[in-house]
Length: 303
Image (cartoon, rainbow, N blue to C red; front, side, top):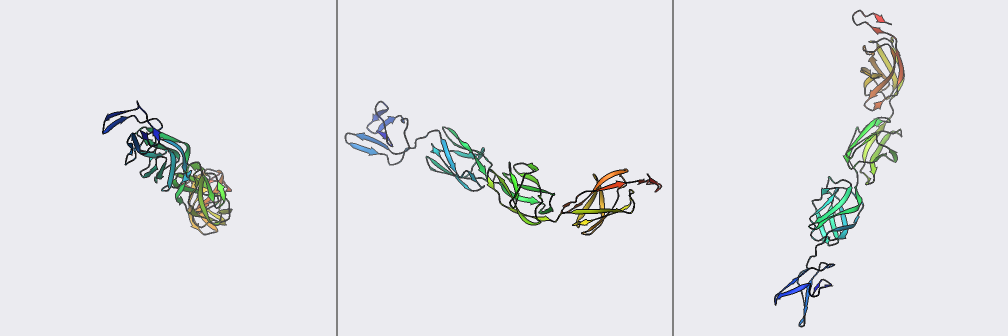
């Protein structure tokens, strides 16, 4: 008697009747046909007998992949597999090709981690980590000057660097779903933003690097709180706030080269760094000295 090619000898089987034999599945048996031999000849089963064993994983290919792509897992004992998971996220679509191979589709929420396969006799865990390719769903804003902050959202973004074309920039903050990064000082214009980690290179998003916001000169009618101040520079169009240190002032008028504002009444006498915030970024700082404040009741300057 044989299970596939593995022979069985007495007393490992018992002839119960002319139509039945009771047998223990032998160690080392593989899935295949059962054959019985008598003096009259040999008969084989029409169907294969499936031998179950705890699964093992020897490899998987590819080593990295996009969400929704296919991965082939190679090992043993894949008959009767009940689940396949990536980093403990159970896959909903897999096909047992044979007792040694499984084809599985990565879910949209798959993340990097170990691969596990399970049958009724146990669970096998891959020795190596499977890495899911990062994916960028959005960037915000879509334009800005060098030195401004860009936020990237997506999936599998952890442990990454950001590329603006070929220029690599380390993130300021980095999680699996979000990255903030400072726009580098490279030539203005449209660039492709990608995220790179052990899972490979993500899809790209277009970001426009605008010309830097430059503050050249501060002109005040008087260095007194509550008075008009004029700021000369370049690329100032779209100014939203003027800052005296950390104190914000509203923009009064605005062109690409001139911003006017009012020196905040809340400022105390002293030295401040003035910056202009625009939709395309924040300017360099310029020193400014407030010489006096006005009494709001009398209009008298206090020096």
